[in-house]
Image 1 (cartoon, rainbow, N blue to C red):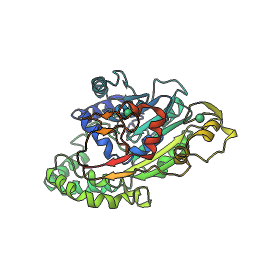
Image 2 (cartoon, rainbow, N blue to C red):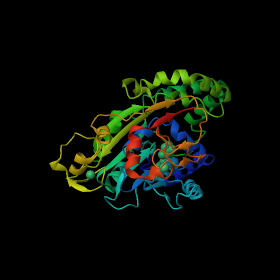
Image 3 (cartoon, protein in one colour):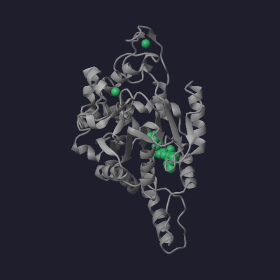
Image 4 (tube, rainbow, N blue to C red):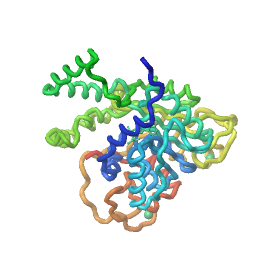
Length: 389
Ligand SMILES: C[S@@+](CC[C@H](N)C(=O)[O-])C[C@H]1O[C@@H](n2cnc3c(N)ncnc32)[C@H](O)[C@@H]1O
Ligand SMILES: [Zn+2]
Ligand SMILES: [Zn+2]
């Protein structure tokens, strides 16, 4: 039997173009607020330098980061999806060429050119394993640049769910059985699809990331609620209603266990890693400094001496090594409509934005002021809300 050495671009393009064909970008953007891991993605986003989301799908995160003034681009192997994403971002006045068709295993960026590399649910889909993609991430990041890598974990109860669902589809069982027998006796040929999903533990993912040369600076299992969300899809209207009614009681209990040991059974492995170097780029000001002179290991991001001395303590303390990002508030009931909201920074009235809402920060902030880097940093670390209703 011939072993396939690398999942082909063609297979990946075909699979994912189908997956995203009917996805609505506005829904995807709104769902960002239900993302347990948004706190991680924002915490580790440097204010200067270029960001890449590698394997960006419909592009909701790229659009969200762009809206906040980050310099971000997205790459995906699905050409149709990329074209659509560029049209969407142009319609939202966020630029028209921020998405590119490309392979995360062979990026068009120069060595040492990016500050942040985001990868969510991508590197587990290659038959040859994650190494090509992670080596590329390492190559394109600057020394001091940060990689945020997330994959589904192998212990997730969400997989048990899908197994149970599979068993419960009794009407399809005989057909499946017959198909399997026909496959076994070689009368039927397995469809060539190229679909593969490797499930790793957090430790296994960390080992892959380290093997490519990175230093791990933070990691976690999260996503206990996703186990239940994954059962409640738009097609299951009745079950959705039950979830909506119960989650305001049930989800806050699960929230208590996010980031604890039991979150091992949640959906996600998250690894945050730094490309090391003797001269590193500072996370806060992007200046290059001599890493050897610094108190190594005090912070989870590279910090130069000036920033160490001058940054407000409420900002820098959030980056003390081992400090996990948190949401300041978790909402499961929609808030009542309030009087016109006033921006905390410029005191102007905040216009309602159908797509982005209030951007998810505790403090009222208008869409212009959110782009001011210092402020953004403070807000994002100190005041992010989680909303799921
Ligand atoms: C599970 S989706 C995640 C999408 C997005 N990151 C998100 O969180 O919504 C995986 C994405 O990776 C893309 N992808 C898979 N293999 C790729 C490759 N070799 N190069 C670039 N993109 C790839 C797929 O087209 C798909 O959009
Ligand atoms: Zn600095
Ligand atoms: Zn303002």
